[in-house]
Image (cartoon, rainbow, N blue to C red; front, side):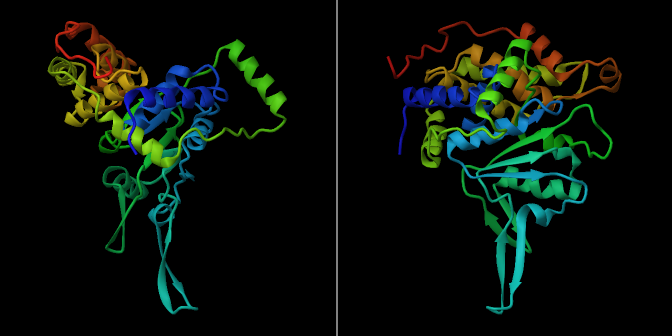
Amino acid sequence: MAMDIKQVQEKCDEIISQVGSVVLGKEQVLQNILAGMLANGHILLEDVPGVAKTLTASMFAQVLGLEFRRIQFLPDLLPGDLTGGFIYDPGQSQWQFREGPLFANLVLADEINRGTPKTQSALVEAMQEKQVTIEGRVFPLEPPFLVLATQNPVEFEGTYPLPEAQMDRFIMRLQIGYPDAQVEQKILADRAERRQDEAKLPQVVTREEFLAMQRAIEEVHVSADVQRYIVEIVAATRAENRVQLGSSPRGSLALFRLARARAALMGRDFVLSEDVKQMAIPALAHRLLLRAEFWLEHITGEQIISDILTKVPTPEAGGSQYVSLAE
């Protein structure tokens, strides 16, 4: 199955419309999440409890036709609780493998920073290698394999901060934020009309169609000027005096993939510098390790990336001399 960019845009519009009918007032966040999924990346939702992080993951799974599993991370969660393991079947006198919750298309890692480092290591292998290793045997995970992780940024008791290497595996970090008063009132009205807590959405695409949408992103053109712009932004994070450790080339690749996905969401088969600007903060802010003195002053990675975007020269429009295939 193949899709062109116009078809991808139409499907994306329908997906956002459906999820946005339940997760109200957050269209930009939903677009960013869908862009991350189209780019085949894992996403960290970092926000306070009760702002629909879990609901958002569940709604995307419904409309995308993906197998969905939720894992509640706790300090006593073991690697085998994620991966599964071998169970002895006395009836057949043999060991049989039983899959854990990682064997799904969309995995919600809820309160991920409550898991111990040993358990996190099993998740990191799955995120990076798309496989799990159990007793020396490798089990591949069926594509797409996407992790949506959540964590509460203001609660630290009983948590294990994610190491920089694991944070780097997330293609983007997003905040959902509180709704405004008008939207919150609409949330109450919708709940009263629905007469139940659970929300159900129709499936918009099949798993095969979603994979075709991901493949279509590879056809989005990124000019040499825009590629250079991405590299200059990432290089600026390494030269920033408020940063102890800047973004690695993995950050450049993440921004490259996300800019392509956003272009497709906008119905274009070529990337503009605006796509890069819109995705730079979600793609790069969580990859920066700030110097202690600036961290204490409550300087954030988001502020630093925003400052960098004002300093790095933007490529001139049309500099790539690229003509859209759709024209």
